[in-house]
Image 1: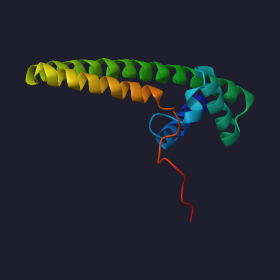
Image 2: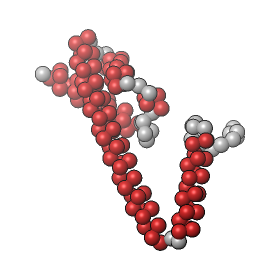
Image 3: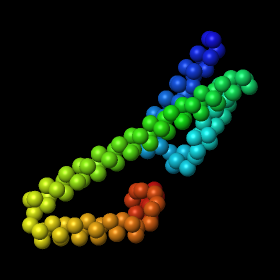
Image 4: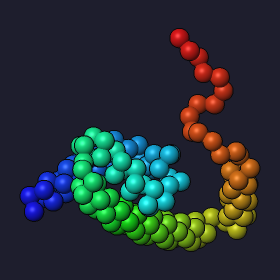
Length: 137
């Protein structure tokens, strides 16, 4: 029982430190991984770092998979809720602007928004940051 508690404590510590070190939005490498692949990578890192035996490795793999599934579900729910709240806020803003602006101003604003959406869709997606060549010193 002590071994299992020690493993759980170690896993929690390892994962909490790892999560704090992640850049906002998660690492680019981890985004394309399945839940199983994420859990497997965590288990391999812990096995190497903590020199786990086969029984511990099996237990930790099960714990990591369960935790990874749980956190992915939480993230999905949060993202869905956030999208819904943003959509509602945008609709409220739009309604208020429609009341405050003339019909010509409102149409001009909507045309501009449509142009911006088109421009964004046309831009290639790549790493964010300054554009153009970097000055190296």
